[in-house]
Length: 212
Image (cartoon, rainbow, N blue to C red; front, side):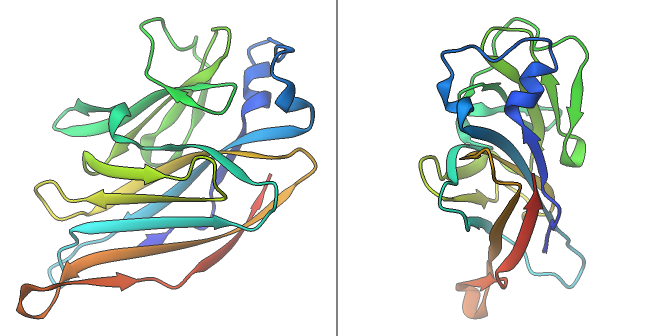
């Protein structure tokens, strides 16, 4: 397992303004805060000697008193089948929350590339920043973190053992004067043990500093 050490940080307010729209006055939160979209990455490699991974637990903890998670993706309600696999697709609102994709086109060609083929197409609707879309290694996923200063995801195998690449995305409310954000990340894997009894293998906590 390899934890990506360079999260992608995108400022929702700045992305919204790229469409040529000022932030509506009713979003007073932007007067003293920014909402950041952070994209994290995880790689799970599998060869002939590897143990079969049935569960992956990915955790992030932030080290700033104003850091508040407003949304985490992927979540089961935003998953859809695609070409024998699954994708997470959601519209990202100015208030830092995700919503089911609307029928109207999400944008007109302005794209932010994310990890592993994921992307965000910028929107041209009133309170929508853009539509995110990225692959998911299994449809059995749980996520938590909204309203907290930490996030976590649990991926459970559906058929084949878990392997490949996975992106996790979270929206984070933060004081606008913060330019560097410290966090730490840990991954735990569940694999078969002696006599078939599953065991959990944790990684060490990995400290990161994110430039905003």
